[in-house]
Length: 139
Image (cartoon, rainbow, N blue to C red; front, side):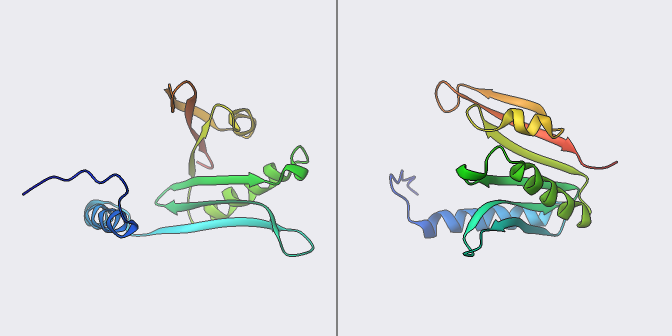
């Protein structure tokens, strides 16, 4: 046996490893389903100008991305997008939400919407920080 460091691994290797850990997790996890979820806003040409994406599993909504076009920022579009994805997750039975954001991104925005910092990773990736935030959606 030889352990090999691969500087530029093929996407197939990464997918294989991801699949193997997912296989292990599903065999031991108390939930049997994890589903993608997204909301979007299109302009009159059909182009996406705002949206959010994540996944739901068990009691949790995990938000991976929330983006609003530069021209729409400050117009409550992000608040509406966040509300919509939270509502859709609650329909799926989620009562908690989790996300992370970087120091130059949107921590005050999420705090305004009830998210609380649970943990801060200082020095990420060098001098910044990453905030892991949670919100109770319903009791």
